Length: 458
Figure: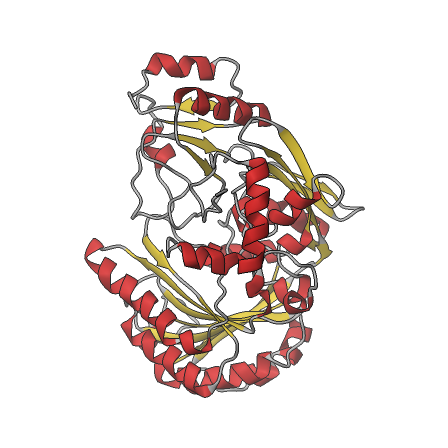
């Protein structure tokens, strides 16, 4: 394909409400930079869309000039699928507005919004819905992949609370998907990712939530296995309001962290309670009484909590996951032993998330087969030195391999990068995958939207 001239992009700029950024634009370097520093694509242009009409125009331009299309929402895309070498990036980050109907407890969210946009809009009204575990998560990609977060045991997955979505198909049609409009497409958007169109807005169900209480409790890494056993037994009987995770990480510099753990491998419990501190202390009492070496507990607005542990940009990233049928002592020992392989110091996290609650009770047959798993191991690798790439990848892959005897054989695709076609099918479930292929054939038969965990139309 011949390189397009700057003049060729003038036809796209005509009537374009957003901005078309090319390599000649002063903002090109910043605009093309993605969350994962391992990814360094140079697109032919970024169509920074401000309206659905901009999206239609961008897709038509890409089709006319034979440009490969990447769709960039507001968040991370750890595999770098939000960009492309030599193609056109349909960039939704300007489409980040949130409009609320507090009486109906719903929110309409732009396709390029982050969780911060949504949470800051809902907080003044004492409302919230399940979001990512940090404020920098993109609402669109998060939800279309299923959407698990701190509040899912209480409110279900993000996709469970999706009421409708507006999108632009590959051939430029503007559609709404809901229970009554294009219902099969609506089903596919509950876990099927960005395979079917460019989602320009999503409407969610909200719930009353004025505050959350977070407890961050520190132990030495050697204490991890015993504390994790206690946490396993606790969370399996805990009320839906309790969420959180068990994590090995590099101890941060903070007044509540023991000096001996700062900059060193540490084991923590991060406990999140959907409600006030008094009720939280009662619900979390078994964990608070285990003799942690340091920590804190505080009640705060949910939006503020979401910003406390944001994923920092500019790191090299490699993530993976293994969903588990159970967490026996042998699995705990294997999980904990691999923490010694993590890059320390770094921003990496060696995480075990509990499932259960409303997530597991939901009966809707969405293509998210991992929802019933009681545990998820999530190696979340972030480091700065390219020399650590092999070590970081090996650590993550070894965790997944070690825990395979207890695997459900399903996986949350938002937690992984490129791990092969079999893992993509595992993210949807084999039967769901066949049904998703039929939806793909109807809405994107040419596979224009293939830079994702792809569902090939066949």
